Length: 279
Image 1 (cartoon, rainbow, N blue to C red):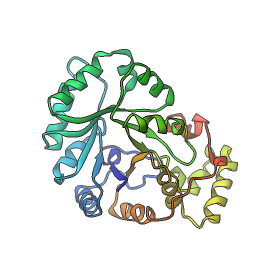
Image 2 (cartoon, rainbow, N blue to C red):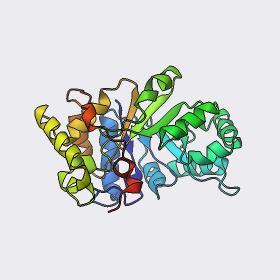
Image 3 (cartoon, rainbow, N blue to C red):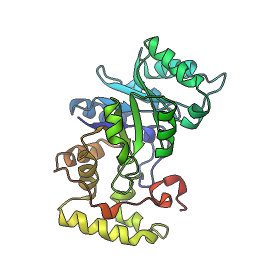
């Protein structure tokens, strides 16, 4: 099962299309139970996602793998302390994966890579890696010989900047975890695409609409079909706030896998990077 659960919405109000807000405990239990029964084996979280780690810990199931991330690092907020806190919050003894959330710190300070490797050697972490925002960051880290076991990257129908690196990462034995396949829900909602800010890309939305109609997809199926067509991808991290959303995603995941047309690709950061959205 390539689908993995993302949990930023469990601790923070996140996502342009998220009208439900932070889900209550009973809904999180339903989601985790259903995910486990459906064969989902990985939950992605971070210490920076509000109280998401604690909430996962309350409903954790054996055999679920957890990937978390360390936030900005200081003397008081050392890697060792952060990982200890995450283990305590999650109520587990070891974490499947731990990623750097802010790789700019790692690029500047090589002692951080040694520090996280020490945590791995102590048995608290099985795999280490980093969460990235741009290919430039990946190139810098590989030049420094910081070879990860997991990378998490944004990747979707519009944003394919990391695709040229898939082969190299796979050869290095790296697990490629992708996020943002729905671009915070933008790619699922034509009403949001018609928002005054996004109308500057009307040609993309028209082409997107024509493609999904031609191949008889709905938006969820189209987004999933595209990313599932890449054999190099290990996990597809998707955030949900309701069990019904996860059901729809899993149902859509059984559709045929087809790469989206290249005419949908955009390198415009004002579109593909939500931090630049001027709403």
